[in-house]
Length: 455
Ligand SMILES: [Zn+2]
Picture: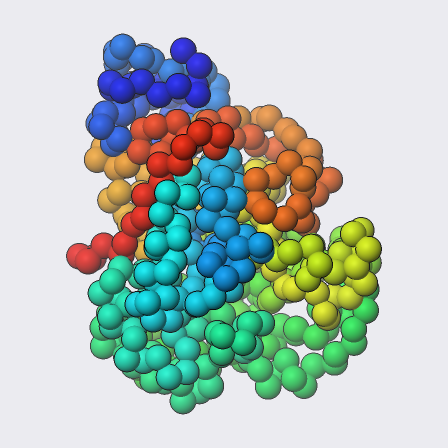
């Protein structure tokens, strides 16, 4: 039967390359009632329906804990329908939405309710929400946490939108103390505003000038201050989108000192480099910025060492006019363009293309993009692994297939991505969500998920 049809009874999915928690091997996976019911020797299980993938790999669905959907309020930037279609097409079966760029932001229970209501019936994958910790909302954190957000995002430097102000040091102390008290995970955009203000600001189409305006020191100073505050408050903190390798020694030292800190990085920091950014191609603009090749090599070394718990997209699109892309008649000014990379559908092949070149396995990629982020948000046990009892969120991945990226053919809302024109290795053939094949042309059946209350 074609992969696009989902039978109602138990199904066996068979592959020569099943990526299991203890490594990759030939296996049969029995799916029943939306969950993985058994994992057995290749060729050993029977069911009315057997889907044999041959050499196509079977991976657990990716968990992307860093996605900006922007609905309600800025749905023209990105909405739940378009974002989750892109996710499903890219092998991402769980998305955790960031608390800002939507209006209202997710800084109150009312804001969370507005998101949940409008997302209803629009999600092709499972969907959860982060809350936001901003100046003055400390009293909102506990009710939001009880309502099921996975933790709270704060910015140490201006976020780019007025309704989500950054925290000064006193606000940060308050927010982290409260999060330590309620047992929440604080996730932090770490760039230091004083360092950014002191950096040279040279507008224009040259990427080098933009890079100089967001120096390594901005990240290092912010992370040092955050770690010091985490140490004093006892809060559990997670550094979002580490771009600069200058952060790595600070993380190592803090961990050695017993600070509860994790960190993530993103496909664009691992696969793109400042040297290759064309003049005026603001599709590459994000904050913190994509840095140079030697920095990228250091991020890969840290990733290989287990220093990042997750590799997640930081998918953060905007409309074409705000991106100021030279190719669409915009000024191409890096200083003025919206900062954000659109890549939700491409993270897996982008990372696999580079990982393979560097001698890494599919198991490594699954650890970085599926089980790692699942553990970050407490979803170990339901998401992020092909293991008995887990949701049958699965991806048929052709690890040798190649394709050229055409921005206009991607499912996210606005046809911009820095990967446009690149040839990537690794193609998602089928995505299953809780045992059902996801067909982005049919009705969505993603569910809204909440933070598990027992950790
Ligand atoms: Zn982000």
